[in-house]
Image 1 (tube, protein in one colour):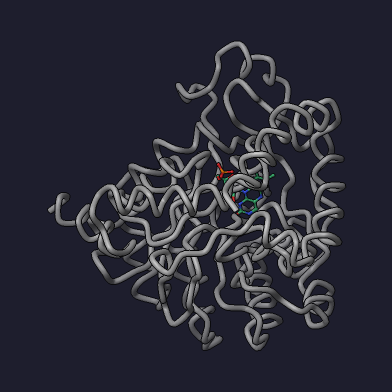
Image 2 (tube, protein in one colour):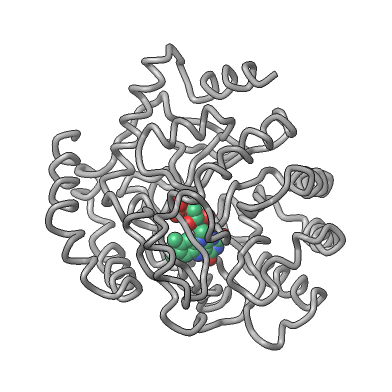
Length: 374
Ligand SMILES: Cc1cc2nc3c(=O)[nH]c(=O)nc-3n(C[C@H](O)[C@H](O)[C@H](O)COP(=O)(O)O)c2cc1C
């Protein structure tokens, strides 16, 4: 119901957001997640928020996606929301990043808003209840229409202090979830800048050792590698080539931005965060992510799935990711700034954009963009 989403959007912009933004970002996130977990399962939410159209449906790596918009890793750390994300309008929803061992998260403050830059400062450092505890709870959950995926990282605790231990630790989380019927895909997070061992696997030898270990696990679900935002083409290509060699099904571009000189930041605003540790989501992620999606699609052709992530605030932003070569699109920050009705609005807007350009499906739009690249 378009007009309902328009009204919800107006109320969110004019009333709800100004109130929420008066309070600490992490407290608001925790409380909104709690509220979403309890009310999100009701059918009324689905009627108000969700937009469906067969033109948006795709089967990718054996899974059927009702629409291409997914919740990115980092909003639903411990899987309290996954059952209701379909009602909010998502086609898929990533839980995590989940780690084998529980971790309380980095010291606070670890989440802050940069509204002029349309960005969030993030320094959670893989806050997680731990894979087994999360799986036990998810085993009792009735999931909705959004496909569920698990983002896997290595535990951010002092005892995981070598690459070999981190590899064992990644493997432990895959083992916990690989037999779960509700897990449709995995994300392999090798690009978190906020954890001690987070980016060690951008090193090719380390990455290859990790991939060899994962390959031995014989996981049935597709695994998508979460890639960094600030990476040279040749390094991205080398990582993708290794990933494909060891059975990875695709790549997600991208994780957070580290570079505080990124021109998308409002200069005054970013300077005010000089004393805070952390990395950034939202608008500053967008340009590099889109450039990398284009590059990745040209490199992998149709050998891999590409998921575009970063700075999606509208249907136009999401459609741009598809025409850069993405099969699917993920977001978090756009929903925080625009409101939860954004997902339905993006899906509805994408149908209009597809029709405007004369495409019968998302695949057609992507293929036309790919032809232009050649
Ligand atoms: C609060 C927050 C926490 C995040 N935590 C994770 C995480 O645990 N694992 C991960 O792969 N990405 C994490 N990310 C990165 C997002 O998944 C995404 O790549 C990035 O925010 C760009 O998308 P956006 O601009 O739509 O937010 C986090 C982002 C935010 C905003």
